[in-house]
Amino acid sequence: MLKIQPASMQPFSTLLLRHELLLLPGSQASAGSRSLLSSSLPGGSRLLDRPFDFPRCTLHSGSPEWEEQSGAWPSSSEAEDMHKVSPYFDPLEGKIKSTPVVDENESFRVGKPFTKKKGHNVGPYAVVKRKSGKGRISWVCDNCGEGFGQWWGSCPSCHTLASVKKFVEAEVSTSRGSEISEAVVRSWFPQQLRTAAPLSLAEVSASRNQSEWRIPLSGHFGQEVSRVLGGGIVPGSLILIGGDPGIGKSTLLLQIASILAQGFNHNGPAPVVYVSGEESIEQIGNRADRMSITTKELFLYSSTDIEDILDKIQTLFPRALVVDSIQTVYLKGVTGSAGNIMQVKECTSALLRFAKQTNIPILFTGHVTKSGDIAGPRMLEHIVDGVFYMEGERYSSYRLLRSVKNRFGSTDELGVFEMTEFGLQAVSNPSEIFLSEHFSDSEVLAGLAVAVILDGSRTFLVEIQALCVSDSSVRRHVNGIQCSRADMIISVLMKQVGLKLQENAIFLNVVSGFQLNETAGDLAIAAAICSSFLEFPIPNDVAFIGEVGLGGELRSVPRMDKRVIAVAKLGFKRCIVAKTTEKSIMALNLEMEILGCKNLKEVINAVFVRV
Image 1: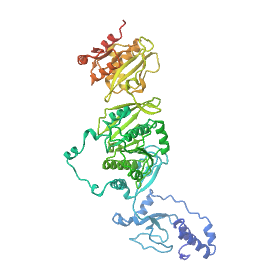
Image 2 (image 1 turned 180 degrees about the vertical axis):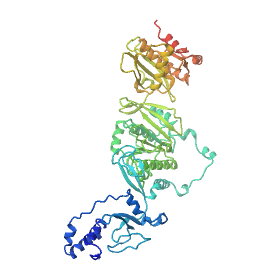
Image 3 (image 1 turned 45 degrees about the vertical axis):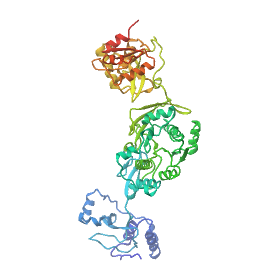
Image 4 (image 1 turned 90 degrees about the horizontal axis):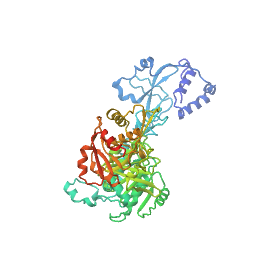
């Protein structure tokens, strides 16, 4: 029962107020004490209902009084007992007191005194509970998935308000992803095959046939994708496809899955599973019908649980697995929701172990951030075997598949596709994308020049447009060309050639949004500026290849033979190159005039001549 101290020792209102302040809100002890006081004491209910006024106190953890009073607490040598005591401030007596912290399984009763330990000032009523069991507390942003060691009102990474949430991660969560994937993968094999041993290089090479090692992709579309992948899909590889929303990642993977399921020139048809966490199987089926995909061995499944996905495909033992996308799947037991950093990392690691131990290739898509990088941890690109980006303008139907990382092939390859209502179609002549219609001897179209660009192993003919305007408020505007490179070429034209470009506003543009990054287009940029400034159109059968130096000289660029051959195949009659490469190109015996020049002055005298 509640023991009431004599009035000579303590006023009843003081005792009652301390009791009300210190009891845990909502506990059985609090409810029982209030009922006992109300029923047994005269005027007890009035005392409970009457509001109490106590002096305002400004004592807090940063004030000198707090430091002075807390100095009597246990020293660092008694740190083993510190977690069992919690300090609190008593507003009636105006000083700090301490109260024990007990586990949930320890019983307590109101009025039961606690034994003082090492001079601690322990109150007889207040008890602070501490949950049993250990767990790591982390703070994770729901918007971007960034983790922190403390709470923030707004995420320091994405600056979203009230998005940082508390997660209590159990100690077993860090290894949960590997445990799940290992358990699921091992269930695929008999007991005698579950243990692996190191093999010599000779044994590995003897058991693998290089000609049949990769899985080929048939058709014009399949050959374009295979060339970017390095010759086909390697069994047991993990391939990541990135790109902006709506660029065509899901369409690309659905077409690849259809070709793999048909299995032309590769052991006939075989099951291929396409798993989507963003669409239902009916929605995927509608897209397949629009693209005229009727492969019977292509299986569709909608799920976001990695354990469930790997368990359901076990009976099929597919030739390949497609997951769309990695930000929608999750592993049970791993902290956070699907899409955050930890989930993306653990899910990718689980798929990697599954692919390597089952020899089943896995292709999956990944969302990108505003900067164009794969969303999630940067180490995601280090885990996978290949990273490929789909690029393209929003209002253009053309798509580029670029290799960023490829453990089984070159990263210099580039695939060109066109998005149609029947899916992606390979483009046979990519130079048609970046060349507009030419009208010879037209003064209106002065300022056009054709550059020959090499992107990876592909050769593109890109059209450069220039416009010089006098008395304009805008000094310079550049699209598709590095600003520093454009400024250098303009300065060389003014200094070495003598063009009076100081009072002209210059606009430069690359057709179809192509980004010109290599120096082989310097000569075409200079020729386009000269054409616009002199108001003299360049004939539509002339191409330019060369780098411009600060002295106005022309320099050679790598792989000139491949560039010139591509120009000849497209029907150009003349090609302006550096003088140092003229003899080597003439040895190719092409049906095209090769004109070698030493500097920009010779180029102007050779091209801008009235006939």
